[in-house]
Image (cartoon, rainbow, N blue to C red):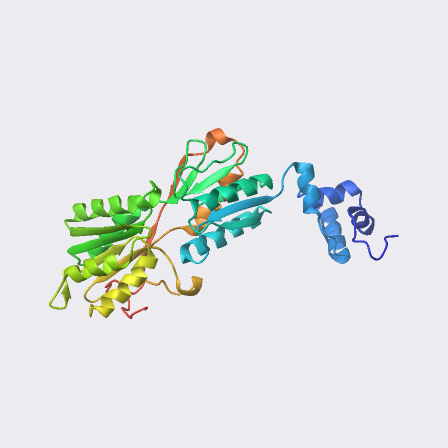
Length: 338
């Protein structure tokens, strides 16, 4: 008889189900058994409230069933959305996620890498800003948005196509003189391709365009000055603006309205990322949507793929356009979303 204060063991489950201990082990570890045996074991597990010892499982399999995610923060909506879907992708594979928020600090990124490697995580997914990041060869790593070497696959949306799509959409909606606004890292990364894609789209459609690009840490007011310099008699010289992400678009729309410009009647605005209010409601602006659930699935798939030789150096996933109230589209209601 099992002592009342001791948690149930696999032997207790086998005794309750009337099956061999090996059958219980197979069910617990996801190995196929006959459906009647599986049902009996699952019923016994539920009745006894048996808890699988994942630590012991990990020791036997030489795994911790834990993966680390490095992101700059969970305050920025896109990073939060990414963390949410990567967690779901890992949970589906019976993995737990160790979340590391780096606050854009390159030194802290390296500290987290060292820490999670010491804790023997089974892999790392990272959206990083440290160009000199040192990662052990024994730890699988998947990068988001930045190529980090031949043996580290990078997952990104098709940023070039997204920038081009934004230019084409503004042209289709009647814009003729447009602007591109960007705050970003000086590092070479995939989101930088949004600029080249937008330029390509503007040139292909004959759009006149100007660009205002500032680096991380520089004041947002530079955008305000740029727009003010293009304001004459209360009218902005631009009839369309593409912002490198939705967070900038959100702030720019407020600036435009303070300047007396109507959005979208006077100026149409498109962002990038596909951010929604409260995570699942309306888009905060018309936007190029990154396929975040698919990106998360791809990261998890590549992370646990054993054959490194067949891992692609870069996977670009397709983007789409979504209306969010800041462009003029006849079939849509143009109510202000902000």
